[in-house]
Length: 80
Image 1: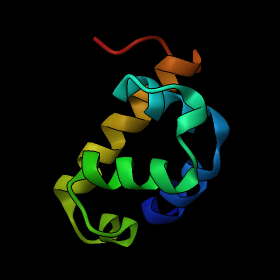
Image 2 (image 1 turned 45 degrees about the vertical axis):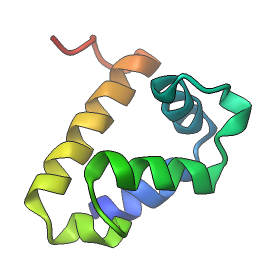
Image 3 (image 1 turned 180 degrees about the horizontal axis):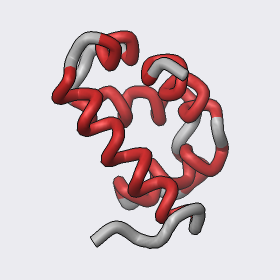
């Protein structure tokens, strides 16, 4: 799945919204899909999730976020 599409789907995911909120020290109820998308764009240093298709550094940052999220959910062991 293209990274931009994956990012869009993640921003709709309540678990990813809670993860993003926790990373910022906010209540999970504070983070909506829009706030999560803005946080993701900020973390990846992009203006649009579509930029993940053409910006290798942004894609690398996105992949780190995915790894951290997967560890947070228990899907994988915590990264070192």
